Every structure is written in structure tokens, then in C-alpha cells.
Image 1 (cartoon, rainbow, N blue to C red):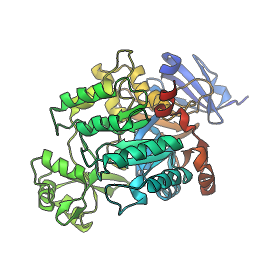
Image 2 (cartoon, rainbow, N blue to C red):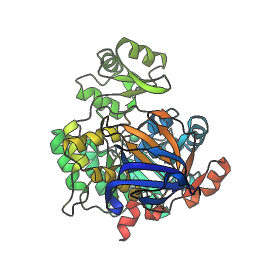
Image 3 (cartoon, rainbow, N blue to C red):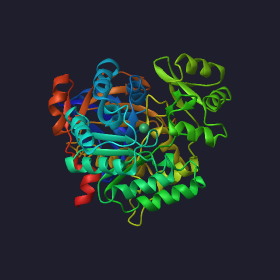
Image 4 (tube, rainbow, N blue to C red):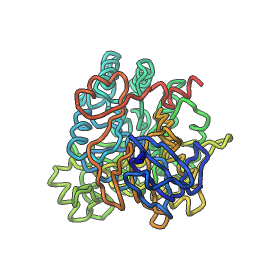
Length: 466
Ligand SMILES: [Zn+2]
């Protein structure tokens, strides 16, 4: 008689790919969705969860996170099911899943700088080629360039993008080169440097903070440069705070982003300026407390920054809400979203607010529920080439995020048919890696379950050939 592992009863199922927005039951077996219908027989299920009054979305896919340990828990709590990490080394990804894992699906990119920490502003062709193939062999989907923090020359940046395209591995760019910065000019340059090559432009909102022009003008400019570019994927997030580093060398913050934040806040771009910004409550230090990462500022924040000899994560309230709303909701002439996804750039940075802020945009009337499902799951699945995710049709992976429309927060998370979070309590463990054929051997050796993504189906490459 038993034929379902899990049955979700009576939730409002929102599944734009299958054009569904109605109250339905969803049955899961062996990690897949096996039936979606008006009234399924509860006697056939091993366990039943009543989700009446709740919204049932395809599992949230966060297309830009930094997992780092406790991020696993923080993301699961926020309703994330699949996380795309931007820049953690493979050893960290694997050990974090084993120690901190909460059942998430995890894909990752390797920061090319991690292979050449002492390199200057350029890399040789051999260095680039070796780094790209090494990242893929180690199990990453590809490479991340952090031009905003420690830039390369435009030539080296373009060569990295080109080499990733040549080798068929994923490439994402936090914009900025030695000629520009982490701002709207950097974004325009990034689109030019990509040319016809595929490129993922990270967190578009962070280039619209008013460094060059009014944030709204910058957001509209970003949209103009991204619209119609089928070789470019992008995401933006909906949190006031950014994420950067506090490390200072010779009295100056190393990260260009940190220096930008100080300038925006009217502080000198120096050690002393940063110290004052922390004391004034403008710079927040990220510290672990109660099993999560929290923000601390003022005297207490300063204490942590000094104890870490300045080398600690910082966040500044620099994101413009109006620019963020424009980027989250803007569509092109064909009715498609210009920025593909709402991401968080969160994980261990405490801003995993895509579900909550996205629901507020729905309440505000800026997005419909179906549109929110597109931005949180369907488009991210296309961005990553995940055909069995992003929707709730029969045969899809049983990745589900249930949301409470009153609190706007995630109520339950289901990954591959297993409940990983319920009512704010994270119960999942371990994890599941999404790698490419190049990384299969390395990931198999880790003992962590995995599946293979066809990188040619990711938006940056599929879009080019269609
Ligand atoms: Zn990031």
C-alpha cells in the first residue's frame, strides 16, 4: 500500500515552469516528485505533512553564496536547497559538508587567486590555463574572478574568461580590473571584456551603490548593458549589507571594496578610518555566536577586529534598496527578467534573505508569486543547467521550499526528498555535490554523494548556441 515516502498536503503549489498556481498535494518517492494532484491518498504515504495555508515553491537555488561552515545551517534555515558557492577551495567545500552539512546541494567555483596568492595584476597564459583545468579537475564547476577586491589587468581578465570558455568550464566575475573598479563602469567593462564569450556577472546590485552616479541611474544603466545578452548570466541580492574583509597592510585596507565603503561613508580609506567606522557603527564585524554568524559593531566589534589582527570579515550597509528593487524586478521587451536570479551573496554572511525579501516584494505588488518562483528557482536552475530542478513536475528532483505567507519566511526545506528544515529547526546533515564530468573522479573520492552537471547547458553557454 505504501507508495510515497512523503506527502505534502494542501499547500499552494507555485510552479511557473508547469504553469501551476493552485492548491495541490505533492507526493515524493526516492528523492523525486512522483505525483501532483488535487487530493492524494494519505494512507499511501510513510509520512504526511499538512502545509495548508503555506506556499510550496520549487526548492530555492541560491546562485551566489559563501558557505564557510555555519553557512550550511544559515542557508537551510532560510529555505535554500541548492547553494552555488563563489570561491571556496575544494578542501573547504568537502570538509564543511562533512562537519557542518545540512543536506544542501552544493556546487562551487574556485577563486583563481587562490592558486596564485602572491601574483600581481597579471597572469601568464600558462598560469591561466593550468588554473582553469585544475579547478575543474578538483570538482569546481569553474572559476571565480574577484576583480572588485584584488583586480587583474583587463588583458588578464579577458584571457581568463576566454580560457574558461575554451575549456568549457563555468566563469563568474565580481567585476573590476586595474582600469575600473567594483562599480557600474566595471560592469560595463565586464560586458565588453566578455565579448561573445559566456560570463556570469556576480551581484549586479553591488555595482549600483552610487560610487559613480545616482544608484537608480546606475541600476538603469546596468540593465541597459545586460538586456538581450544571452551569453551573460547575472544575479542580484536584496540585503542592505555587503560582505568584505577588514585586513589592513601598511595602514591601508587591502580590499578595494572596503576602501570604497569607507569613501561612501565619508571615512578616510585607511586603518584609522576603518577603526573609526567600526566604532561609529558604520562597519560591522562578522563573528560566530549561537551556531550562526552575527554582526557586531562599536566597541565590541573593534575588539574582535583587533583580536583578529584586522583579518576578519566585515559588512557595511551600502546597498541601495531602490536600485535593488529595480534590478530584482526589471524585464526586457520580451517579458523576461534582465537579471536572471535573486541571490543572496550570503551563506556565512548573515544576509540569507532572498525568500523573506522576495515575499515582501510580492506583498508590495512588485512580483507575482510565480515571478518570485522564477527568480528564486526556475531561472537559477536554467542558469546552472539543472533540468531536473527549478520546478515541481513529476520526475523532478524533490527539492522543495515551503514558505509561510504571514511571516514571509521559509517554513520547511526538502532536499532530494528529505526534510532538512522544519519550522526554523535545521534537521538535515551531510550534503550532495553538483560537479562536472571533469571533477567526477575527485568528488567520487570524497565519499560525498554527487551528480554531474553538463556545463554546456548552463545559461552562459546554452544561451550562446541557441
Ligand atoms: Zn560573493
